Image (cartoon, rainbow, N blue to C red; front, side, top):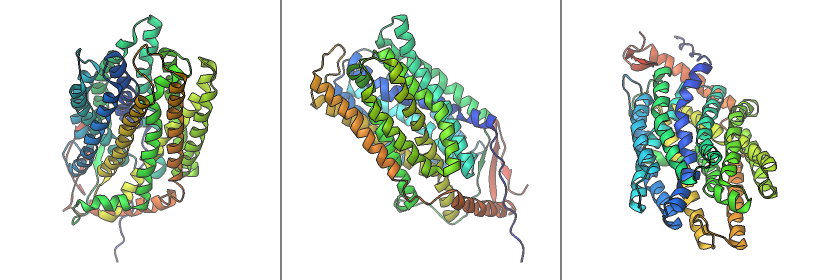
Length: 476
């Protein structure tokens, strides 16, 4: 009986390739921090749009945007071109994101709800295309358990630089004596210029291979339910929802909390947020490294427990005391960086399990579903928190004086919700079974099957080299 071809061994991804590929995370992370922290407050405080209207607009757009991700993920998995699968979508997403950023961050005077909703939709569409194509591409770029933790750690660490650049803008402007109202426009121009440069680096320096597919399986609508019903993936979805809702909830209220409750200026609060974000530059790769020692799901539990303890300590910060404030912010940022690193790497492991069973690539669809949970969390974190604040007497308008009770309500909203959700996210990992040993067996079977298909001259695969896409027949 003939022996099956030996499973192909994939070398560890070179650091230079990982760093180049991480370029897309620069604008994605910059958008995330600008949208969640600065833009809602800008429209409510500086442009005079009602607080509840701003919250409702963000909530509505997120709800509209959520089902689009499933279609995008399905479309990405079906794409097969000489330029690759995810490379093409990365190229398409850049101009859409740039258009949304330009009109959202440089709005004309007198804008209202309709303007905000339309351009939020455009911006989120471009951001979804870039985000989904990036994480799905990463899953194929680093196919093995530990290398995935390393790659997603690098991606998150590089993304910290994009977020830090955004946070540096209000710090510099305050030092120059410039008004807060100009911060958002400067952020918009930075993201607008950074996006094409980062995307160009990624498509130039990163190779892509489209894995062979086993014929006979087509995706049906009921397969969505089947994917969600997988115990490992259901845990990831719930954990991702909670781990996005907790920090997202905090982001929506961050400037309000640190200025009105803790007595910092906007510039000082931005410095503390920069400490939180920059801590992720060390935290992301080190949390990825911890995952290689104790497994990804256990590393999630470590991160969520430590993060919650750090949040509790925020109320102990003396009024306006920067020296004390940086300590819990650094610890929280260090640990929070591990949330996405670990859950995204775990999703890639599940994608391998699904491909082994179904014979088809489902990375785009799986990541679309995890991004959906992130967007649901984002919608509720802004929409719900802004609605609550508007009902408990807190006034967000610039120059307003709030009562002690309103500020106390702000503190409760800022701390209780995030702690509860983050701890729930960690609890989702109890009993998780897709660890290193099981994944190694999945990869062994996948490599053996892919080797068999590579030897079949009748099966077409497409291999794309960086900056030089060339169709190739399997077995050549």
